[in-house]
Image (cartoon, rainbow, N blue to C red; front, side, top):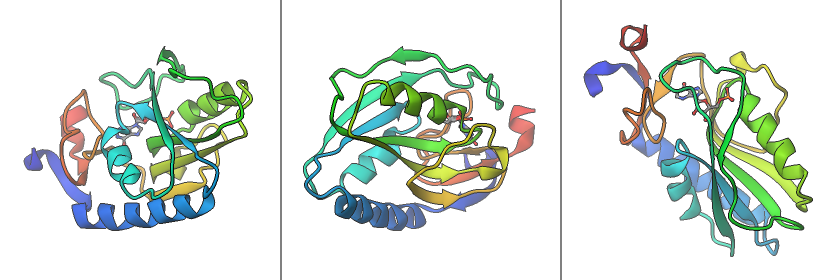
Length: 178
Ligand code: IMP
């Protein structure tokens, strides 16, 4: 799989170091609030597993599945909820956990969707932020890394369901998806 990468953007060590910082920050900010972490599948699963183990306060975990790009590298602009939460979030402090904030369409939709259920608060923790491609206004409270406008894979992120198991994040060679 390494031959499909143009370059390695973030190594395993860089990822782990930053995620440990994020976990400490979230633990401090949500002390006494028992937050509910909501993972956006499938991309979040590796990041979320590592982030959760750096959170030192009592918390809950749940997951949602939303439509993704399929085999294309460009968003369709439409968001579909394929799996909803399995619990009531009324009065809870919610932290949405996402792999990458790209156009912002997914997270702006999800934030509004969750706010309609009257939680105490909703914030976003994203591992990566690609601000150059933003089309919908979204503010992430926790951002691991700001990345350039390139298609990245690994550490949960896929292209056509491949590369999620890489322990690092790499920039995919354009000829793989062109
Ligand atoms: P948004 O709605 O455009 O912000 O898209 C968010 C979703 O698009 C992410 O959860 C990813 O599944 C996918 N995505 C966006 N950029 C990339 C990328 O560079 N690599 C892999 N998936 C991506």
